[in-house]
Image (cartoon, rainbow, N blue to C red):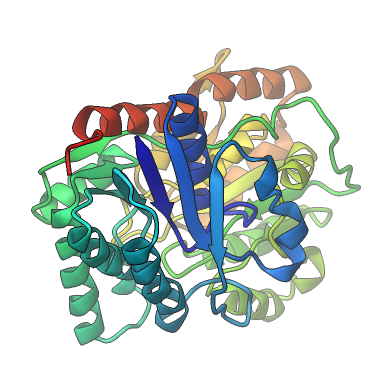
Length: 393
């Protein structure tokens, strides 16, 4: 079977989507299928890391507009990928199936192109974009348009791949039940693990590694850290990654007088991130409640657990159950409400009773068996093979 994967983000750009789609491309290839990834040219600073020639599948890249932070984020940026994608599918090689990664604008043009070529498509529902749009300050008309486009795209898919029970249930609330299958999520655990180089620090450091957008609500972490610093002046906080809230987070550190103890760094490749996580006191993830994303799971928790690093989560949803998973009689982390005082208390408890090297190793070994994205990719391949095959257009 010949399968295309269409996405405005792919390796080597660090993101949950890059990990998921690369794992799917590998799993499809290992199953004997011919795979072509239709994606974008990476930013200049990552171009050397693309290494497309060494992959077992083809990668076809196209120039794209990026915002001032280097991300393909925003409707104009999305369209700079989506419109050319329409013609790439229409006039390119014929495929037996096309896997489409959000946003819904990509799904919109992808559905048109695949319909003309009479090719079934698979939609990878990692989250619900219309829910996210409602939290970004977008006008009501924009949110309604995004919701309508998203539902139209979802209804046209032969298969909808849901990454969690929460996403599956939210799809059902929107009336999308046909063709939905829950395949799970995870990370590529290969670069992680408790063993390996670690960034040694003089101060106990908490790490927030990943996007900080409106629905993450990471400002609660800055407020909590200020309370931690009142009792532990040696504590440090490190943000790795970008996101729409980054400037506000920087402002908040100055307002609370903790800017000297908080550092902001750009995204890191997995191997470099692993070194930082191994040397961290704990990693922290947040999810603002009531933002329409209570069902979401911050994949940054998987990366931390795969390194054996204790994880602290503030918010609601499935991440609470995950961080309370027990390994050798100890939880791999702690969950708290989205509350600065309670989050600060959890951070202080971690500093008072840090995980031992043996406990970290046990957590990393457990994560290698339970959070590998390879399992999810293989589940997706089985579903695609079952529902779509040569001659089923």
